[in-house]
Image 1: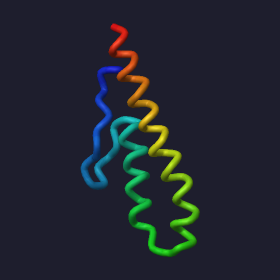
Image 2: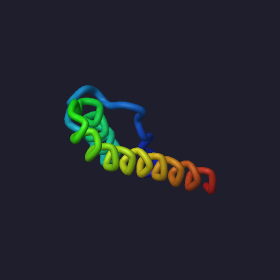
Image 3: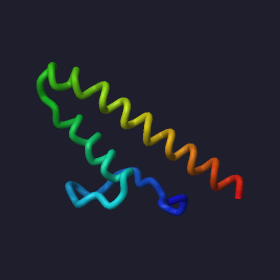
Length: 67
């Protein structure tokens, strides 16, 4: 939905409404990892989600500029 603005953050632990909010919610969990093993495993997933959101935002902005 090009009219859906990707939020910078969502309410704490509220039910995500969009895929963007779901990904951001999952990314917040990375900050709650305490062991080095958990952080090592979670870091790749966190970076992937962050890059994915940035790419979606870029594509939406590009699509909106074409109109």
